[in-house]
Length: 276
Image (cartoon, rainbow, N blue to C red):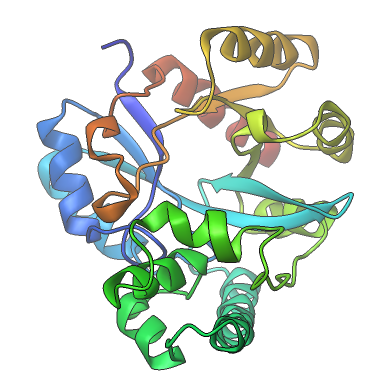
């Protein structure tokens, strides 16, 4: 495998299956030297992951994945090298966590109206201590035998166009970029293969630092295309597995989609430039 860094992983502090400890340990066993844990709207995994990483020789870059809206489309941004003790970042993420819970309640109400016997407590049982999201609702439906597989929940009920969909409160891209920047971090467009080119260009002109070029959803043509965009606009590159584990069916992907140590070095060089 080329590269020794995977900069997109999730733990059970958002919609991943594994603990921070498990992720770091598995990274070490997979030959990864650098990882970033980028839980959705949460940084609860990072303190333990960073500490354990230091013990076993895996650098853990503190990250987060934040949801924003452009042209009525949900767009995800990755923040790297964050100060996890930044007050504004902590306040925002707590606010978003509360909003996620209220959204889940509305989705559950719609599902019940569709005849599905599910409660918010079923969803909380799946989420445990993490910020509640649609994946936890999907897992609750699966656990109760109301669907035959995880993806059916989205395909049939809770996708963006599904009958039980509820819009999530988002910050604007500009506000998200400022939040990441004020916390000392760098901002990247996550898995751009899912978005229109007009949205990609909007984010570039808004002031994004980089693009996630390597991702399981990107084919070779897309990787080449986004690498060209990075070079054209003098942006940074990132990449990773977007690993979740468990019933998401991506166990074989762990550490498979990597970037080089030099890619991370370029990110660190930009951070130094921003401070000076």
